Image 1 (cartoon, rainbow, N blue to C red):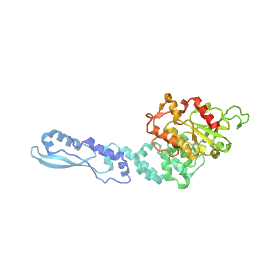
Image 2 (image 1 turned 180 degrees about the horizontal axis):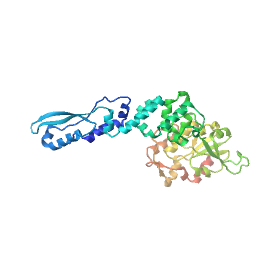
Image 3 (image 1 turned 135 degrees about the vertical axis):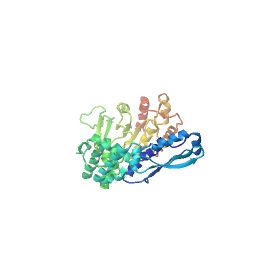
Image 4 (image 1 turned 120 degrees about the vertical axis):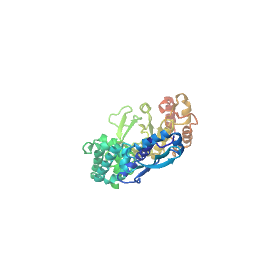
Length: 394
C-alpha cells in the first residue's frame, strides 16, 4: 500500500519544520498559504480489492485535526457511490505547527523574534537564517542580548571577559557561547570594533578587543654559559609570556622545538642553544620573537601526517626551520615502535623539502603501512645524540 498515511502527512510538515520554514513563516511568509500537501490516493482497483482498508484510510485522514480535506465523489462499478479524500491542505502556519505539536515552540520563537526586533534589530537576518538554533538558546536569550548590548556600548573594551558587567553573565557563560556571539557581534557591531584577522572561537577575545590570557612559551636553556636568571645553575625550565620571550633577543646558535614534554625535559646540553616546548598548530606567539629569524631552528615532531603539517605551519613564520629526526631512515630504524595515526591529514603541504614531501605523501597515501605513525618519544635517545653531534659539527 503506497497511499499517503497520517504519518506521511506529518513527515511532510516535519521537513518544513526542520528547514526552519514554519518558524520563518510566522514573520516572513515564504510558503504560500493555504499549503497543499502531497497526497497519494487509492486506485480504483483498491476499492474493489481492499475496500475496508480504503474506508479506514479515509477515516484516519478525516480524523486528523488541523488538516483540511477536500473530498471527491465517485461512482464505483462495484462499491457504488463513494466519497474519498482528494487533497489535503493546511490553511495557515498555526495549523501546520499544531499538526506536528510545535505550537508552543512557535510561540517561543515569535517571542524571541519580537524581543530581538525591539532591542537588537541587526540580529533579524540571523534569526531568519537559523530559527531552530534560536529556539535552543531561548533560556539564555536575555543574557546573550545583554552581552551584545554591552559590547555595543563598550566597543573594544580592553578588559578581560571576567570584567563584563552584565547580570547573570560570567566569563564561563561568554566562553560557552562564543560561537553564536561571534555571529551576532559581527552583525551588531561596527566594522571598527572587529578585528577581522582574528578568526575562530579561540580568537574571540582578540576579535572583539578583550584582553586575552597571555600566550606562554616554555623553554629550557641548554648551555650553562647562557645566564638568563640571577644565580642560574644547570638547565633551568623557564616559562614567559610571548611578549617577554620576544624581548629576550637572545644570540643563539640553535633553537630546538619538540612537541613531547619528556623529550623537552630530557633534551641534552647543547652549546648556544635552547629547547622550546612546542605549541602544536599554534605558532603565533613564537612568531613575535623576530630574533629567532637569525637562529638555526630545528623542529622535532612525530613522523606522521600531522607532524609534517605542524612543520609546514612553522615554516610559514620561519621558512629556514629544519626538521630533526623526521626522516625515512629514522622511521625505518624504529619499525618495532610504529603506531597508528587516528585521523591523517588529507590536504597538501607546500613548505616541505623534497625528502620530507616524499615521506609525507607516502604516509598520507598509506604506501608504507595503513595510517602509519611514529611518535617522537619512541625514537632512541642514542639517535638524538647522533643527530645533535652532526648539527654541532656542521
